[in-house]
Image (tube, rainbow, N blue to C red; front, side, top):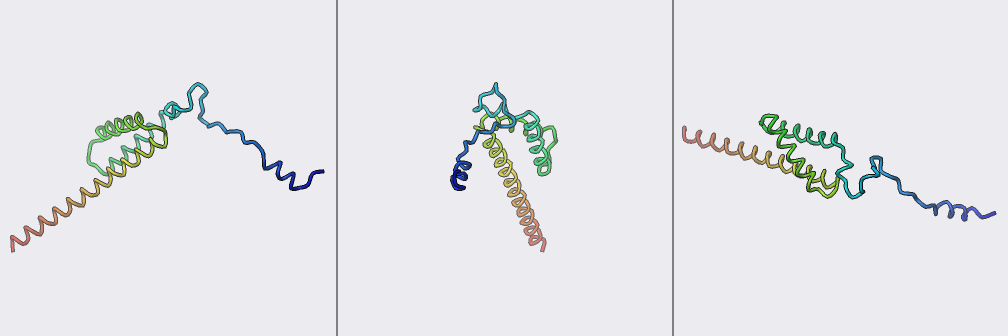
Length: 123
């Protein structure tokens, strides 16, 4: 009868079988991530872009939707993988919102300066 340490060694040297992805399709080469991304997922991403931009920009919804669809398509085309796709979209949305915030701050400072200038001229 083998010792308990020998049994532990045998158990710990099991061979791992790679687990297939849930959305794996046998007819699609594994390098093509685009065919495994469902259209509903892409539509959900476009809708999130639209909602984010609607909250921050006073533009008609149809124009925002057109922009969001074109933007998502461009990123979808140039991304190397799904992680890169999501990262590029997230970074671009963050940069757009940061620019919006900076513009709002500058606009407020400009109006404040105008108010102070007109108040000093009136006195």
